[in-house]
Length: 68
Image 1 (cartoon, rainbow, N blue to C red):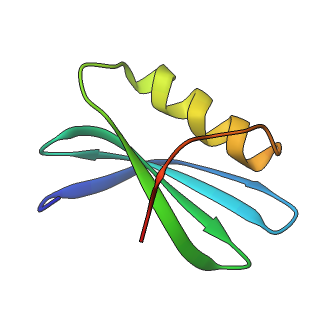
Image 2 (cartoon, rainbow, N blue to C red):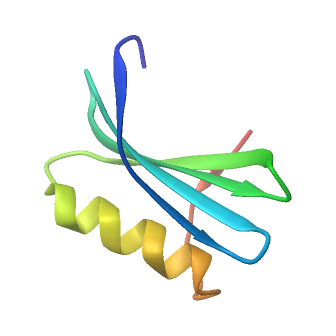
């Protein structure tokens, strides 16, 4: 991910998700207690798809992501 622009941020309690636009497409980054815990790349998906993933994460719903 070379170029990235934060489009949206979702927060709830100790969880945060950021939706970014990168050279690879939309990406959602996941944080717990202000610590980066992983990300999910959404190739071929829409911005709203990436937003839904971020919102699901902060609401405590199961989300599959790449751990860092």
